[in-house]
Amino acid sequence: MTEVYLTGCREYDAKEIVGKMMSGLSRLGIVSGALQGRRVLIKPNLLNASIPEKAVVTHPEFFRASVRLVKAWGGRPVMAESPAFQPLAKVMKKTGYDRVVNEEGCEVADPKDTAVLFWEGGETFKRFEISKAFFDADVVVNLPKLKTHGLTYLTGAVKNLFGLVYGLNKSQWHLRARSGEEFSGLLLDLYAALLHGFERPKTFIHMMDAVTGMEGEGPGISGVPKKIGALLVGQDALSVDAVAVRLVNLDMHRVHTLTLGQKRKLGTAALEDIQILGDRLDALEVLDYVPSKAAGDPSPVSRWPLNTNFFRDLLIERPVPSKDRCTLCYQCKAICPGGAIEKSNGRSPVPIYNYHKCIRCYCCMEICPEAAIRLKRGKLQWLFRTRAK
Ligand code: SF4
Ligand code: SF4
Image 1 (tube, rainbow, N blue to C red):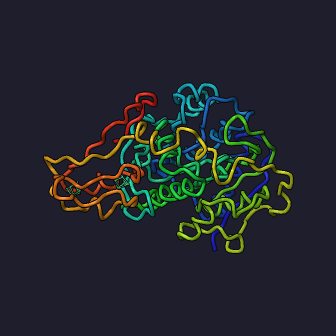
Image 2 (cartoon, rainbow, N blue to C red):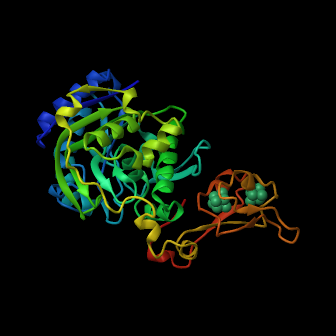
Image 3 (cartoon, rainbow, N blue to C red):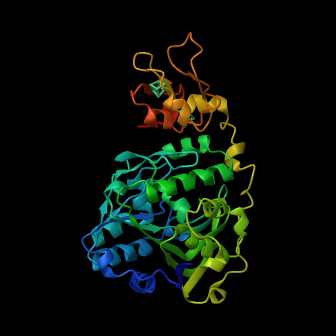
């Protein structure tokens, strides 16, 4: 049985929100000592440069409340986020985050400062280039916004952590994992790596901004702000998302991060196994919340004209083994989830790669004992100015 704290919260009043966050944490058994002297990474949703009233981003006053809470409990807050397309400075200015970080005194991690996280236990993807600030953190405070999503149906706690991936590298992941289900599987691989990929596991706290959420064609400005009037706190991202989905009466079965996540034992998504603390769910539930019409398979991304093998080859680095270093040990073949590597036919000094099957997970590169695999840029990659490490 996991626990999620749910409480009514109708206004973006930082003082009131801090109190509710603290109540939630203490109901979950998390006391101030959990943050004392710790480096606490705060991860809001800063998808793009839009005013807070559009409900695209985690509201700046909600973020302010989290910074105050961390400081009040003796932690050292650092915000980490990498917007999808625009520079972080521009997004922070438009959303009002620059004012909040200055007023509250919160460090901001450079989104370009990244490191590679490799975790063997991922189902498909095992290698992620994410914010280095995550490596340095003891505690992760995840601040998702409750929004619809055209690909994954819900933007919640699991999905919000995808923002740790650097900017435009995110679009490359959409080329690797195309359907809503594949992409949700990727999100879960990342979530699993964040949970289990460190010798000293991080403490996770998810606090969802559902004061004003978004309905319709989210998660960007095509969506419509929707008053929900709630705040959720939990330590299991799946449980928080499951309660959020129930709160706004979305179809749980369409949220692959929940159905697959439960199967992969990454958390608890079954409501009967979640104890809701705080306010009664039926007192806060929203019955007229509008889901995204676009969500479901085939996804908008899979329909995207550039999303083909042909364009993937042009837009994402391909792994290429070097004949000078390769010893034909075939560890790359053994780990390849795409079945894209064949043994040499005798004429090739290196394994044979089938780039139509290659999903660009770079596990081969990570595992190669000879550092024999290099990345070759796609011919049109300059359009995106992206890179893998
Ligand atoms: S793992 Fe490296 S050395 Fe071994 S076959 Fe693959 S490329 Fe060659
Ligand atoms: S060839 Fe390498 S990058 Fe491509 S799918 Fe296989 S392991 Fe991943």
